[in-house]
Length: 456
Image (cartoon, rainbow, N blue to C red; front, side, top):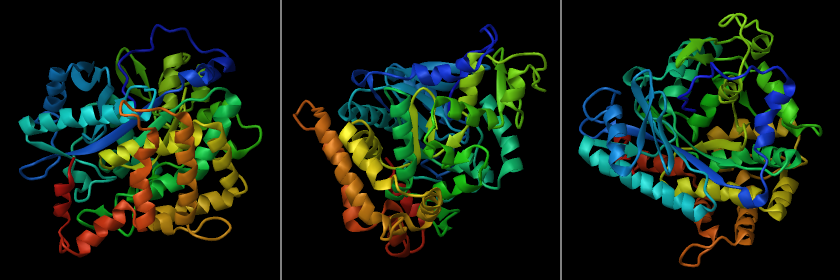
């Protein structure tokens, strides 16, 4: 989730619809300026007893952040608490229960992306040796109850923790127990954004299936392969889902603005403080009638904050966020951006990917999205057959897109190698969660704690 460290108090107010569309229009870039921004979260645990460390305890989350200073990172504070670290490789920030996230820098190619991930993991593992902590790449805590998890000192989290139980039964699990990999991508125009958005939404269930890695809850199989994905189905219906309107012919920036105006607010930031506006309307804010700040009008920062509080499968800000994947190890952190860059950053590949899914109805898209958390690649696809067959076609398109980009590493390799871990998943017929379940029922003898040996 976003980290904010500035107040909107002295900015000019928003007075026209054009100002709400402006962040999206500002995201338009020529192809030469398209970048790749990868975000990945990991679970943090104390090696001695596997508990999730609190913010303040010795060797806890605050100490981990501070240790990053030896690698050149600089602290970001909120109300006197260090909540993130900023550096050349982006931002290291805190998820609600101390999940550690790298929001990577915008990079030109996947070789840089994978190197960035490697640097980050080397740094946190070195810090882990000093602080007695380990890092686990899964989509969800395999053994922790909500009550066993700490809460980080960020203002927005306190508001969200209060609000989540009002709107869904699994929102607290989303905040406290899950981890994801995401990739942020650019577009050249409104039409290009719309085509990428539609293709990304339609194929997001495939990413969920390939990266499914959350089959355990509180030490036992939960009946799902991506329970993290299932959690989103009962988090908050006003700000999640597959966004049917994106597939309308007239979809563009203004339609997304209208959607966001109907997403209930969480908060407003003034003078560094989070003001609870949960459930209130941004439309009322535009009219100066927000109960939390009567008489005040929103600013551009308020709108940007609000854009970060919707959680659909694909999200638009001044770039597109692909949000469907469970957390995982280094190879899959490199593979997710490879999949989406291959599909969306080459015109021929984008056309081919859209051709595969453009005839699906909204009901068929929803049915696939709902089937994947339990069935992964065994989910039925529109028109018959299983998702694993479609996966082969999609990976072939992504490979052709990456090859066409021709971005070479220092050793002369193109970017297609980062798809190999996904090829292996499809060839084997087993997604990561199924491999974990095989070990749980086999060599682990029902002891889910054995998963910790697969830490970064």
